[in-house]
Length: 243
Ligand code: SAH
Image (tube, rainbow, N blue to C red):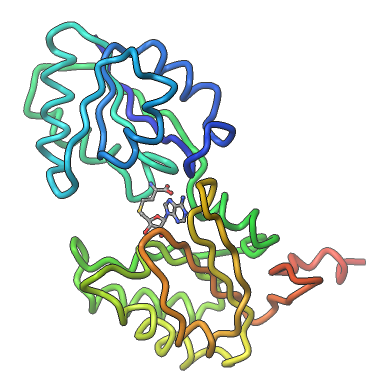
């Protein structure tokens, strides 16, 4: 009787940790949002796979806890890392309502890191990860975080940069950053990291403002030092200046 909350990495098997693979093998039931279950269906077809629609997160946790309390080993999967805009926190919260059950979080490569590797080395120094989704966070708070991080010259990594209802949020976010940073700031975005159709592109901050991205994209806004080196996005850490 145990629950694993597992980060699958960005998508492809090669970017899933061995530990994640092992605990999925050990689990009798694997639950998660449809898209993530589809990512692992091929490798774990012999398991009981429970896919649940989005927006029923607490219900999904309950389902997993109830299966575990029947004496099974159950894995709840998320993309990237389960503790970064994932289900790990909610699982601990919901589990309080039940009799004690062991919960283990298994780390995965989060999109910030897998996407950064595609672009070059944008995150080398202090960076701030901000989600543009206002489903669970008021937009005013997101704006404040963007402004503070931009003011602090953090490299920014943006998750959930768009959706059908939020098609202009990236534009709004760029407008806030443009108050603090040059329009020529080196930026980049990566779509479908580790999945079919992976594409990465470098643009200036003013170009990023006018770029339409989808929800399978992670966006990077460089700090004042970030450069383009042979088509790669690179934030210097300062080694070359140290004597
Ligand atoms: N737990 C996940 C994040 C979930 S939030 C993680 O650690 O990576 C969903 C957002 O993550 C997406 O809107 C996108 O911005 C980013 N993301 C997750 N997987 C991605 C992928 N394979 N390619 C590009 N962006 C991805």
